Length: 240
Image (cartoon, rainbow, N blue to C red; front, side, top):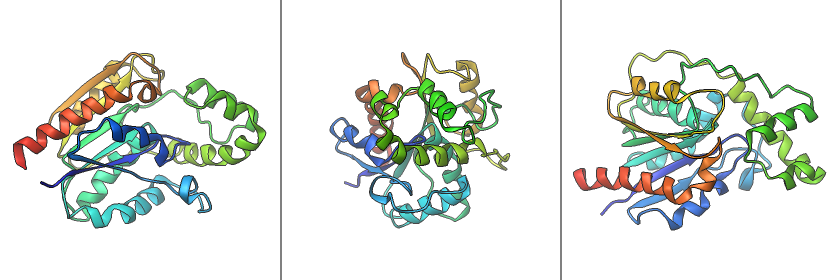
């Protein structure tokens, strides 16, 4: 029986490694496929993206050979959610099969105007302070000059593409089920704002709340995996 591929895109500053622990919790009918973005991890020597559009071109190049072979789903956290949302439309425009499910984590809907300030062009100290407030970055990294020398350019590049991203109204809604994951202590948007993801798909949209901040996915790995398992194995039982 075919497996369902799960393409995962990371948050700003993250690499494919942030999803490596999920494998032990995912159903054996789901094949985990974390995508390594340029400039980090195994691709650390490659130039950073200058825009969301550049990132989409690269991601599409990486996954294109897998889009015709078997059903697949998309998962993104924070910056990754922006990328999977736009990626789904790019895939549709290019005539590839649509994802069977999308997981939007830690991100408000595209049309929501966030009051968060632009961070990517702040002076180093102020930028690092603001990133630390978001959580998710170990104190050891922020206090190490060597690690920050490596990590700071990645963060700045990722914040640049998200800070400068502007949503363009689409002609059609997404044509797949969506699961939205959100931390109760998340800042910048409310659950009422997040619930508006319902307006972005012609299919179902389920909201899942976690007792955590922006990086709840680290504290609730098993719970997040359980949502993925339930969503994708239900699909598999119905059509495969």
